[in-house]
Amino acid sequence: MHELLELCAARGFSGLEWAGGLPGTVGGAIRGNAGAFGGEMKDSVVDVISTDISGSSPMITKRGARACAFGYRDSIFKNAAKGEVILSATFSLVRAAPETVAKAIAEKIAWRAARQPLDYPNVGSIFKNVAWATVPDAVRNNEELARHVKTDPFPVLPAALLIDRVGMKGVSFGGAMVSQKHPNFIVNACDADASHVRKLIDLVRHEVHAKFGVTLEEEVESVSELPGTPRRRTI
Ligand SMILES: Cc1cc2nc3c(=O)[nH]c(=O)nc-3n(C[C@H](O)[C@H](O)[C@H](O)COP(=O)(O)OP(=O)(O)OC[C@H]3O[C@@H](n4cnc5c(N)ncnc54)[C@H](O)[C@@H]3O)c2cc1C
Image (tube, rainbow, N blue to C red):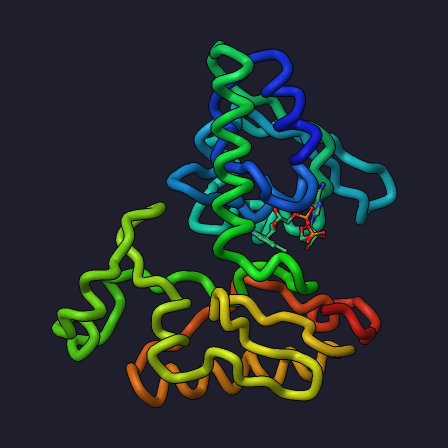
C-alpha cells in the first residue's frame, strides 16, 4: 500500500489518500476491505483478479467490485472465495496535483503517529467498532457514549471508547499491554507472545460485555485458528 500511495503521489492520482500509513499489501487490504478516515478500498476498486490454488488446475477469476461483496472489513475473499489469492486489481482514481495528494497522505500518516502506539510492535485495531444499530438500549440511552458515535463507514461506537470506559487502558498480561495511547491497540511492551495477547483480548471482551452488554468482534485474525495452519507464535 505504501508503494501504491507513493505512486499516486508522484503521478497525481487522488482517491486513496485515506490509506496514508495503512500497513500491509494491496491484496491484504482488498481482502479485508481496509478503511480509515471515511475511505475504504471498495470506494476505488473497479475489479480484482485472483486465483484459486487449492485445486490441481488453478483458476483465474476476474470480479467487478460488486461481485467482491465488500462489507465492513469484509469481502468475498474472506468468505466464499476464501481459498483465492488476489493477484492484481484495477482502481478508479482521479487526477489531482501531485503535491496535494502527497500532502493529504502525509497528514494521515502524521495523524496515526500522534494517536496510535506505533513506537511499539502491534497488530493495529484489535476489535471492530460497534454498529450503533446493534447496541443495547442502555448504551443507546447513555448520552455520554452517544456523543462519540462516528459515521465511518456507518454509525459506529468506537471500540476504543468502550475499552477505555471499562478501565482497561494500560492493563497488561505477560508482555502484552492494552495501549494507554489508543486502547483498541494491544502492544508488545516486553517480549509478549500470542498467548499473552489472546488472554488480554478475552479479558477486554469480557469486561466490555459485563459492563455494557456489547460483544466486541475481533478485527484481527489469529493465524493459529485458521484451518490447516500449524500453531505458532504469531502476534
Ligand atoms: C498500526 C496498524 C494500523 C492499522 N490501521 C488500519 C486501518 O486504519 N484500517 C484497516 O482497515 N486496517 C488497519 N490495519 C490492519 C492492516 O493494515 C490491514 O488488515 C491490512 O490491510 C492487512 O494487509 P496485510 O498485507 O498486512 O495482510 P496480512 O496481515 O499479511 O494478511 C491478512 C489476511 O489477508 C490474507 N491476504 C494477504 N494478502 C492476500 C492476497 N494477495 N490475496 C488473498 N488474501 C491475502 C492473508 O492470508 C491473511 O488471511 C492496521 C494495522 C496496523 C498494524
